[in-house]
Amino acid sequence: MLMIPLLVLLSLLDPVTPRARCAPGQACEPRQRRDAGGRGGVYEHLGGAPRRRKLYCATKYHLQIHSNGKIDGSLEENNQFSIMEITAVDVGVVAIKGLFSGRYLAMNGQGRLYASEVFNQECEFVERIHELGYNTYASRHHSTEQPLPPGGGSSRRRASAKRQWYVSINGKGRPRRGFKTRSTDKASLFLPRVLGNKDHEMVRRLRDSQSAQHHTHHNGRRGDRRRRRHRARKGRGRTPED
Image: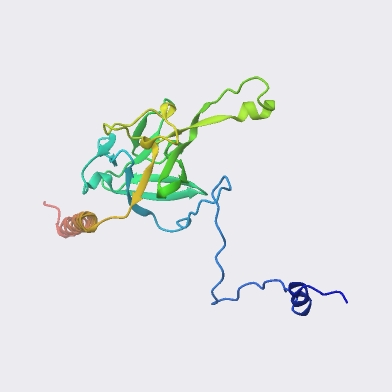
């Protein structure tokens, strides 16, 4: 008599049924998210609010975006210009904005980093997660055509080969040109750090200051309207002199 394997017997007795869709109000098993290249990077921030982080480079500098448009690195632990807002603009693509400078990190066609007052396509960076929690940020629209040796592949592959340009801060705290960077360089690896207590205090003071300015501006405009109405009423009450 043939012996039927136990697993086969169990599968015959209890066949697997298709998984039903989740009903409203029930918890569902989360789907595994992958990055744009399908390499398994997790981007839980997609569709959510901007992440406030400090980008700590492996060269021990925090990326800074100054109000005057300068980009560099700082060794200070608590520096207002190193607090960033990272927002997803597409799958695996983010925009990085300095919270206190109000400017966006951008890379031009010459590979130079600069701070843009308005968001444009040069402000889009491809975010990749690497080992030990470090990330790289490559320009989405600027790269170097990488020539391949003859016979190294099809003509289509040779035409599409590109080398990415990465955000990079060297050992002196200065940004490197994009075409000189590699994803494996220490200067191109950034650790997104959560804000500390002192950072949250600076953010709170900034929010209070902006709220006070808005309140003052609103009250000023309301006072101007009140004075204009008062002058108009006085003008209507006057009688022409003989």
